[in-house]
Image (cartoon, rainbow, N blue to C red):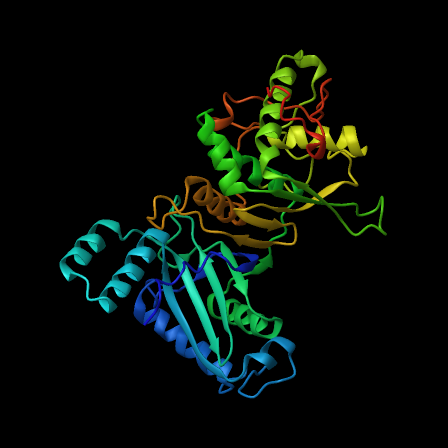
Length: 397
């Protein structure tokens, strides 16, 4: 008997993200999201992985050349299933767990009727003797992505070794006439994702905001790379302890207020959205303070073309420029529900895969206050103090 319900597949796992063009189903297949259609693809890919069908490369039982699959043991099964959203997943898992505990079936039925929501996508699970590999095709619940002949599952998350990934991607391309491409995340998107997450946690301006930052975000580690300026220096990790994050956010808000008062002719502005592939990261409160901090104390600037953010890690997620992503669950009142910030972070990844224009201007809106068009450069007199030298007795802004 299981000790607890199974965790949601999206969490606590490092995935590599890819873009998927719309999957072609044809007239004969009304939808990909029914059990019969998914069972058919399960059987087909199962046969391929067992070596009964050759599609370019044959992988069968007993393969040992590849380091990943060689340690995984013998192939056991491949299964395609509908991936429900997290609320519905938690309901089903609690129901199954309760059945093992002989819980009241009537209460379970009521919970099913009220909590089961729309699907999140398709889950592909490949089991070997000593390892289980996963593929998730996620849809955007805010958009209509199912038509008569196509279904759009724009974000593909994979956790599997190279040979197995090649087999799966080839199957998707040949079966659904879809194009798969790696999803490279520019520095703009990395910094914007962090700013938006922090903004969702700091909307009330009270002590609870500070507690949310410390308990959910914890420490923030930002990795900088210098592609041409310092090729011998692979990367530079800068860690902001959790007790200093509210200070950076508060100081960054002051920076933005000061810049908003600058005359318009003296400020060069541009529009930005998370689908941009290059350019200066938007200066939300935290990144404005962080940029000024490294400029003042390290002689670095995010506005320089040779200084690039390559990874952001915190207690809620890890996001890398190469498309690696790991999301940690944030429970609320023991209800197995994600915080709004985590939910919006996941949706931003799906929207990024779709190349949606999510922001109409270079602004951080909503929980950061009124929309403020931001300059490319930030210049103020009082830089935030080095976090390792911060004096708690100093008044915060």
